Image (cartoon, rainbow over all chains, first blue to last red):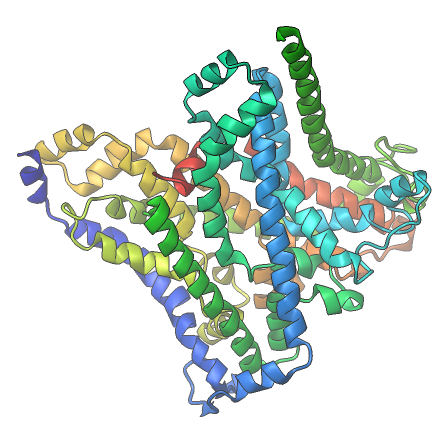
Length: 302
Length: 292
């Protein structure tokens, strides 16, 4: 009966509430989405977004895939992104399990506050810090390495070390914040299971292995599925703030390529083609894995 | 048997505590080093001698920043975009999340609108069409280029709409029966009890605006219009030291100490704000990302 009453409410105001967001998205999301036609044109900036441009079909795609670096850039992107996702997830699960074992509330909260911090700091600031810390001559980290008798490592200037440095520093930045979801999953595990395990004589390790991890199975599967859509997001903010010409070979990713090709070299059409390739592949992956998570984990976004 | 488990559990405890402390140190020590460098004198910091305590303590770098008009100008831009952008974000998020939190039976087109919004997070046109659009619209070189494109943070909408959905139906039904419209329900009933969620999304959007640097770099032709993050990017990454002109000043400060001081000042507001909202954003994250 109540529902019948609510139905009579005039929904006009709901549409009015949605109006500003709809306008904003049409202008700043759907218009740029239509702008992907630039990838099929020989775009001349002077004619503007709505101007008439020459249609060239797939020429831009042929061009970008014959560029010698493109395959390497795709490889770099997938390599950096997948290592970040994989180890980031495993470590976040591990840290969440450790945090859950802490009984002292103040200690636990202090640790959490500290490890959430890097998530809120921008890569501009963090790169300023890392560039100094990782410097081969005066950086603290290299001084530490030298203490053990090793040679200093040029983390940001050596093409072998650069991607590894990106992977490690990014995992470090997001690790703490990523534990939030796993920690919540652990707290929802039935405490009777732990009691039963203790009665059976299981130590802490065994409890983690036989109770905690199985209890987190669902969330781990879900987060893995959802993260696969990010396999082409290797971290533009981070890399563009730390890379340099010396490490382009292993450090250049799709997003930095789009930026340099488009906004620095002015090859708008080729850069749009690279961007479209990236967002197209990502969209297919995200769509697929959202569908799978919906199907198997009953995950819904809204 | 019992003793064995006790010893094992104790070892386990030691491992846990030391691992967590070690990880926390990796977060804290870089900031302490940064702070120490910013308070040290030129020669010892350039030589890389400063560890976790200042050498030859001096405030020269901070005095230098205070007298640096470019820094204050950038700070103004940042505060401006945080207030304007954060305000727009909050308003649009609230207005959007409320209708979308309705059931399809109450609001027929809610799923349609929800998909309309959500699709934009999955597929985008990429950087270049965006850039050309902003240029064509002629809002480059204005603050609108920094606040309008990101006016609707869809992720925040998802957090808030899921929060709204947990509000007991009885609360709004009673008011609807009394003849209240949607506006009254939203502003008089929903918002006052949604403070934790509002705090969370406000924190996220303020941090987002505070940290954004790339948009201003590509949309602002004149570095005078750079917000703090972009200004810092230009001195950190491009090593643009033209700002350090006076030789007299350079006798006491170095690029390294002033950089450290500026990075630290740019961090302070965030370091102060987020711990107070921890309880809220943890809750918001959980509701927003894994809703059953």
